[in-house]
Length: 502
Figure (cartoon, rainbow, N blue to C red):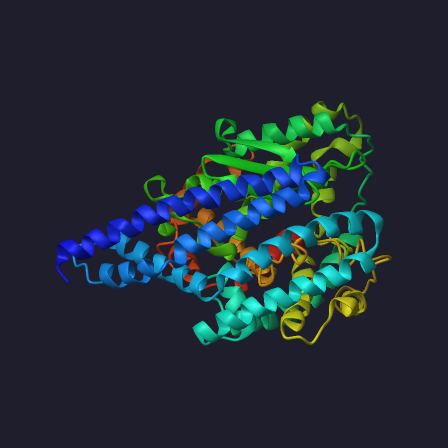
């Protein structure tokens, strides 16, 4: 084939993927609306809309001519580095799509929408019995998809799902990292708790904290970090998330009028996600190479801002007087030292999203084991509560009082996201490495945080992470940005320095 025809084939692919990008963006905004504003009675219609869009996107991606265009485009010699990376991503995305039959795409989309809505009611009513049969139906469809992808890629069923969230990642990689964590984390958790027990007690910060005030302070902090409200908004949902598209970012959180601390950190966490999307290379956003590079990198960005930066002593000293003024607080409870103790309190708890950064990986490792068992057909939905409670007691020494604070607390499984959970802890490991690297590059980074200035940190990740898009593998991005492969050493050093003054 001539160079001219090969280049024309690549250009045709770019046009097709630009249309796909618009479809995915529409789906993202519809998902945000379902989670925030859609009346419950609209669930059926929304499920059909999402299923139709999923099918249109699937048909656009898997049409017979796409394979022909990919074959032709690979013959082109004049493509630059980014175009070559883009073509490689096109082929990867196409391979995932063609491995899943169109009929399964539609059935999965409908069941995901339905199960998520059932989960919302079941969780509110602590009624796991009503969720279990729907979750079983969804798991069977996810297993069907996993089997199809496993056959196409020569992977295990779980690895075929994992690859969709973290390209190139395998459960063997995760097993090695998690084994390393488990070799020191339980002992480190006990040591930190004993160390904190010998220190000053936390003074209670008494509310109530009106939602309107929490939202105002959250928006102020978002602005400090770098969020552009001309290209995004903040709303409320059952479970905090970031949706939308880079130019129209939709952040959500949830509020508790008795405790402002969780909501504020959730807002910072989601702002980290949003900044990543906003920082992706503008010239390539409509193409596969311009998308986020998987969920380990995505979670590293949220945890970099929430856990690494926002809980530094320097930033808390900047933030404390603003919290005191915003909520009209008085007394020693509002002093920076006490607020820092609240944000650094380490103790096992039932809820993952409220967990401290020391015990958090233990939550994730439990979910990782359970979802692998479900995908392997070794664990049915009806048996999940017992397995969950047993795992919580073994790993954290506590048993949830009910299923709402146990196996129903997360949206991931009811929405069909199997293979996502391990990326939270992989992201925490990456965040520790990235923060250490950013401090090496910018000597005054923590001092800047003490002035509410996130510019040095944001500039570092804009250059070393955001701007790379999907042109590198997740591990290549981490290696190039930090000089080291993804590992546990930086995370351990961070925990020991922050909590044990080592």
